Length: 250
Image 1: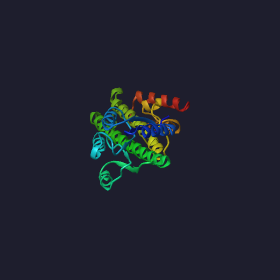
Image 2: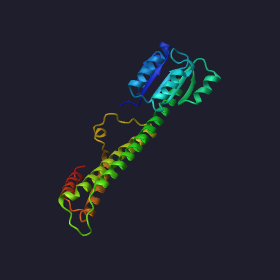
Image 3: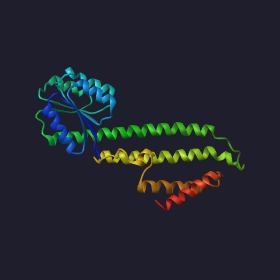
Image 4: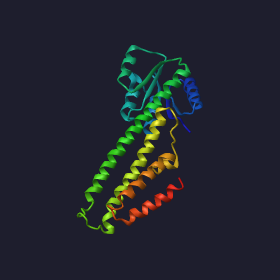
């Protein structure tokens, strides 16, 4: 399981290949290119958690590559490594998403620490962005569902169809609770430097696992039990029975 995907751009073949192999040995997925043009093409065609780039190489004159990556990558962190440090370039990098400015020769333990920290922070940032997007989407969907829900007079017996918007609302709520739990789990993994599963079947279904799923099911069953008198819906009753069956096997 990869600890993160990194792009290294450097026109010095020995540094490029050796650094890539060392980082791969630490569990990272690494792509390597020899110039700014190749780096920009890679950034725009695949997702990365970090870019490591040489300061003095074709395609990065006056930090041009770093500026372009900052513009198109959505905050991708960048580590600059150079054999020709200068006050001018160091000051210019402060205004860009540069996670570190290191001077060659770089001690690998220091580079590894910088890489791990930058990847963890960026993954945390991405998880928070996804959570905020999910909450905005959920609010919009919930408001839309509630706007379409018919108004039932007090003490009136709802028809089977009357409960449908409520069923959809509860299903939407459960789905988003599960999705948020998954996001929180990923955020916790990122903050502690643990690998984040990239192809777990449960992720594709937007569901949590283990005790998280158990807690979500338990809470949903309680809500359905407490509201069964308010919403006379066969669909809700069937849903509660299915959840109780699932509860015994989680």
